[in-house]
Image (cartoon, rainbow, N blue to C red):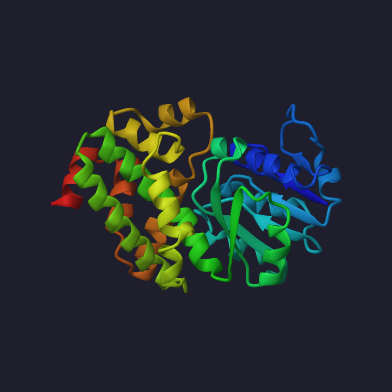
Length: 294
């Protein structure tokens, strides 16, 4: 049996997919939802296999409150803790053995997963047998690749949200397709450079978890982070944008973490730096994009 913790758009979509293979699967969240199979947290934690899809910045507090030491965990959250400046696998490994941890990522809008549309995802784990076990929970419309590059999949899943904000800004400023293509291409290079510093493999960034997720997220208004960028380009205040979204846009918080980590580790991250300056230092978006492309 498997439980899903986190009933936001992504957690609910993954639960919907899993339910097709495991009718007895359950889902839970902080607030009760009108979802078939919804259970309280204690009930959900009775199952051996747990999929976690809660906001990255809430992970640390959540892990302090529960005992997952004997569970098999699949993490669907994406981001970097911007207080501890730690990747999610580093945080989870303080509470769970790496052999019991796996991470799922890839180009996937929740809405299309709910519609059973073909989607490719990666499950990464230092224990590939565990990744294969989790693969069996998903229906065939989800093409699941297995990988052992946890660092690469983590960096890609987090970093693409920052580039997506930049992509939305580029679109919102009407800079054209040429500019956006250049931005995304350089964003992929930047993501790879950052990931290499933390032990990621280059080929991961050329696959679905890297370029696939980046090109999807940074090109569509279905992406929350892309919409953040669009609205920043229109001159809206960040707090107003986030209130209108009504959901977490992880890229806003990941930007701060990447900016700090890049400074500490002397990694050249010009796009993430400019997104940081727009969000946290109120730099004019047009000035930032011109500085990048000039």
